[in-house]
Length: 146
Image (cartoon, rainbow, N blue to C red; front, side):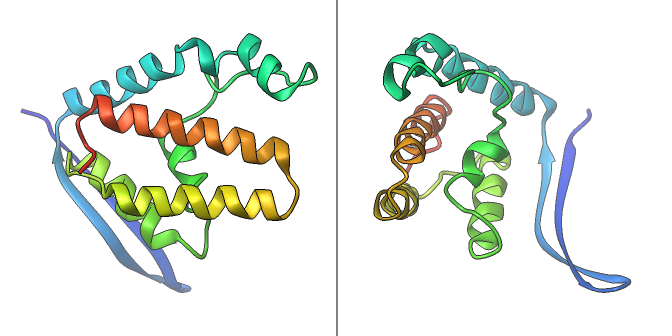
């Protein structure tokens, strides 16, 4: 039986690194389920180009249904380097099929959305609201929200 191991490292010095997260025994079927679930969530009409043009304006090209990965989605709310630990913990929890802390997610959503609002970036603010909904749907379908 084949299982996958994931090691997240952070460079320490020229030839050294720290292992910051290690997730072992991830079955390929779980990776497929992650992929299929993200694909299913991205297929919702809300995240398609036509709907985004209505929400964000006619100049918007492309939807959230193309090119967005799980890592990219999570990284939207835990930008590096300030939140590297939270980002890696979140990805590690998803890979290990461990519940994700809903309150941590809500705080991250609020922090990033408020930052865009304060800095008068309405387009990015709306986009982050949609991404937060997408991430919640994704985690809910996987039954990973606690």
